[in-house]
Structures are given as structure tokens and as C-alpha cells.
Image (spheres, each protein chain N blue to C red):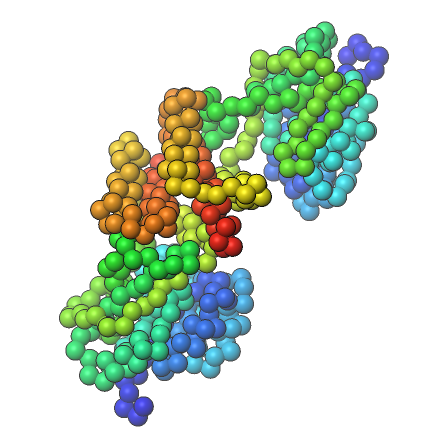
Length: 253
Length: 249
């Protein structure tokens, strides 16, 4: 461990008391853990402070990019691992991260996520290639300004890690749809800021297109009923996005 | 008015309605008696209502039927109107009620409630609900969806009741989502299973019914949203039914 590259693990949290204890354990390989919390009302902070590597900060949540960039600025080391508490950092993956950093060939590394939904792994539905950057050098990377589905922008070479990242976004169905509602509201806000006006085809065509694309073209049909449910929920969330946008222009909630 | 015994008692059940209660009371100021049946509100509801009502009853809430039946026992008039705090009697409805009660042909009257949605009233989606009844023989039954029963024939008033149900899109959708659990549990108790046919056709049919048959298309984007959210609620019912069979949430 002597000459190991120093790693800062960065997390943003809001009411993560359930996932946090195991998640913090899985960050054993980090030299410090930065938590930027958006004023959780559960035991998140108490759990976080239990771990001596953790430094906790708080900031009101505006959007994911702003929040993540603010969290990164608190890190003392250049190399950042930035996972979500609903992702499982397996032993193999953490070892691969340590080995990779002995001689890094890239400035940012993608991980392939495995999406779990209603108790089962989803193999299709457009999640075949769910790649996200989770390890990067902060000197060369910043989150773009997208309010949702923020992407890390890099100036340099990227690579992909071999080990997979199980992603357990599903706890309960209501929790899953609540997340989707949050996203659709944020996306509506993003379109509103860009001056996009809701058109009839947004309401009638876009949700259908999302459904057809995810269920047929991206083979959600091979994921059984779960594929259908996922496609339906995301189609609805597209529909809701434009309703939200319509409401924003009329100043109605 | 010219009657020997009071004509009309308005019964209003309440729980934390400080934002709504005053306007509701104003809209039924013409009644001879107003009874507020409150389930221990934690806000200013009771304080705000007290100067304008004949009686406040505080009662621990168990279900709507028991709550309203308790208030019925205290009512002195021949006729009862049940009003929720987020409902308003318009002046034309007030006039119609007064005229109707001078020479009633029925023992109960239904009132039309157009859905209030996204700051407008949807005329494609409305319900006729029995709300105005002769006190003798009237009572509520049913624990979840309470139903008003009256003794005799039922007529229909022409004027509409304003009902401010809509707070924001998010609470509207989450209300549907929790209602979907309720329906799924009912079907589960009956031993029903969610099949592919349910997933494919039930939501589509609900959309069609809401948007085309009921005429939701005439109400613009709000009408479309009601249809879309209704269909989504039906879809969720079957998702939740299959979750119950997997013992998942």
C-alpha cells in the first residue's frame, strides 16, 4: 500500500441511511470519503460520521451536475471514484481500480453497469451498454451542465474497466417511479430554460417513440414483463416531462 | 326564512383544512345550521371555523362513514347537505337548493362535480354525487368509499359544485399510485393474477375511455393528462398485482 496512488471517494447523498453502511464499507480502498449531503432528514449524517475517513459537507440540491462538481471540489486527491450508493462496488472491481491506478493509461475509466429491476438482472431494454465513468482524474474532468443525466466531460483518453458494476436502483416500485418523476420534472426545467415550447407531437409521438424504441428496437421484449414495465414507465415519464413543461409555461404546479 | 323547523343543515368533515375552510363556510352561509365534524386538526381549522358554525364536534377519525354519521345525529334540520372543505357552493347552486327545498319532489338530490384540474374545470370528467338528502332515513355506509343512502327517490340538481381537488401534478400522480396499491390488494385478495393481456389492453382501454368516450380531448392538455395518468394508474395496478404475487413492494 506504500506507493499506492491516493484516492478520494466522493458521494452525494439524500436520505441514504439504508444503503450507506454497506456502501461505505465497500469504499475501503479510498483514502478519504467526501460526502456532500443535501440535507437528509434520516440517519445519513450519523452513519456517515461513524466512519473516520468520511468528511461530511452539506449543500442544497439544485441539480446533479452542480452538486457533483461541488462535491469533487472538496476532494484532496486527484483521483476520484464517484459511485452512487445504489451501486455495488464488488471486491474484484475495487482490486481492479487499485491495480489500474498503479500505472494509469487513461484519465477516466468507464464501468459497465448491470441494471437490476424487480429482483432480476435486466439484460436488454437499452441497458446492454450502460457505461458510466466512475474513476477519473479530476484535473481533466468536469460534469457538464445537464440537470439530469449529467455526463462527465473529459479532456483525454478514456478506458473501460473489466469488472461489472451491479446497479440496484430498485427498492420499491413507488420509489422507482418517484425517481422517474423527479427526473422528468428536472428535464422539463432544462427544456424550459432552453426556451423549448411543448408541441402536440411531443405529447402524442415522443412517449410512443420511447416505448417502441426501448421495447422493440432495444429488445426490451426479451426482458419479459419487466421489459414491458420498464418501457411503459419510461414512456410515461417522457409524457410527464412535456406535461411538466406545459405547466411551467402557465405557471401552474 | 319562513319555516317553523330549520330547513337545511350543512355538515363539513375536516382535518387540517385551514387553507380552505373559510371559503367553504362562506359559500354555505345561507344554511340554517352548519356542523363541523373535525378529526382533531393540528392547524387553525377549528379556530377559523368556530365563529361561523353552529356546532363543532371533535371526533377521532376511524372512517368517513362513521364520522359523518356521528354528525348526522346532531343535525336539527329536515335536509342535510354534505360538503367537503375544498368544495364551494356557487350562488346559482345556492339558489337552486333553496328553491328545490321549498317544494321537494325527492328525498335526495345528486350534484354534479366537474373535475378541477390544472387551474380549470374539465367538463369531460365529472361525477354526479348524492349530497343533499332528507335527514330522516339518511346514513353513510362503506368503510373506504363511503356511500350516502337516502330513503326514497333521488333527483338531480342542474348547477355544479366547485371542487378544488388539484394541488399539483406530482400529488395527483402519487395519489393514483397509492390507489393502485389499494386496487391491486383487492384483486390479490380475490386470487387474481396479472396477465400479459392486462398489461397490454387495460391501460389502453382506459386511455381510450377517458380521452375519446368521455370527451377528454375537448379539454386540451389537461384532458390528455387525465387520460394519460388514468391509464398509467391502471398499468400500475397490474404491476403492483404481480409484485404482490412475488411478495415484493
